[in-house]
Image (cartoon, rainbow, N blue to C red; front, side):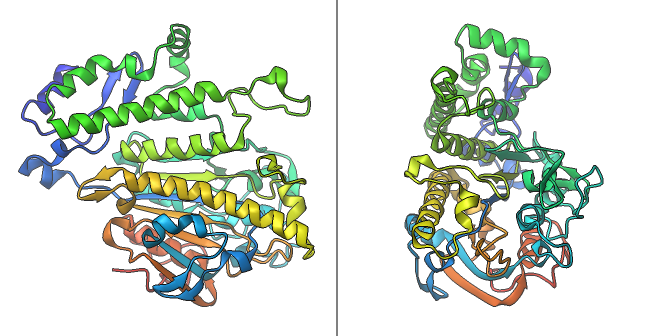
Amino acid sequence: MSKQILRKVTNVAVDRRTFLRGAGVVMGLPWLEAMTSSAMAQETVAVPTRLACIFFPNGAIMPDWTPEGTGKDFQLSKTLSSLAPVREDCLFLSGLTHDKARANGDGGGDHARNSASFLTASQPRKTGGADIFVGTSVDQVAAAQVGKQTHLPSLELGTEAGRSSGVCDSGYSCAYQSNISWKSPSQPMAKEVIPRQAFERLFGMSAQDAKKRQERDFYRSSILDVVMSDAKGLQQQLGKTDREKLDEYFTSVREIEQRIGNSSPRKQVLPPEFNLPEGVPADIVQHIRLMYDIMAVAFQTDTTRVSTFMLADGGSNRSYSNLEIKGGHHQLSHHRNENDKVQALQKIDQFLVGEFSRFIQKLKSIPEGTGSLLDHSMIVYGSGLSDANRHDHHNLPIVLAGKGSGTLTTGRHLVYEKETPMANLYVSLLNRMGCQLDTFGDSTGSLQDLGA
């Protein structure tokens, strides 16, 4: 361990920004009791609030999504049933609208507008050229406020690479359909779809570190092996509880590494039409879980406080063979009320919610401060479409998980007046992230009744 880091921990108190280092790796730490073990630490270190926005395409079967009842007196729906273990940690929001995902005179292209406007609440310019323009997304507004305090200002994840140019949907650039995070109205934030590369971003790996990574892979060593010298020095300074927390964290990191290693597609056994980029898991369940777990580690170590995750691109026609469903997602979403297609879509909705629930339960299981990582998070899960068959952009399927460091009163189903802008929710979340804004996108104010 470096002398600088040792000086930070010799008086038991550990700086929240302490990192373990070695051979091009910079590894953040989870929250430890030693980080608040002195009056000085308590004055200078506060548990941060995190913001994550998770997008799924093609809307939802709303009769099976919408909870029954309002306020605290409600029942989870069939699609949301897997959220029962974290029911009291979530807000279920009905009635929100993305008007800027509608045509508003621009004709077809609802799927491109759905993803482009999801976090920007802005109307994308209809173009297939380089003159794309939509708006800065809520996550990037937050990242501009808090990003300087962390190793990564924000982390963008996905499962489909998509295209950054060309036309994908009724005259709209593919950039709109492939991105929900926008640093500026004309600059999308490219998402990482390869788990290994996303994982190594957390620990300071860059293109310059490629040779070191190759050497480590050759000798089958782990990121943990690289930082072990620093880790042993730190552990000697910690109490029993913190040592156990650190061991649990290291175990979690090593497990993710092993899963990444085991999840690479074996191209020789895949049909010719499967042209998967190297390193992308062939199993969609494994892929989604790896990305969620990487986001959890990013928040746990305070490597970033802002993240987005596209479960699939706007208008994705992915097949969910794991659910024994025939046909692509987008194709099925134009169901014309055919029962077999509606049932297939509901199964997809329920599957994706189940994976989201697994992620939320993981955040809840990680202690932080006097509560959990989930208590200090705000996780938006939803789509910019409700009924995809009709291309509706009102009464959107939205869940808000986490207590926002005590600023959200969860365990309720809130039903808002028709045409309430989704952007009003973003104003409220940005204020809770320290961004004192009165307006965002097409907002008309902040969203009422969320909590303190």
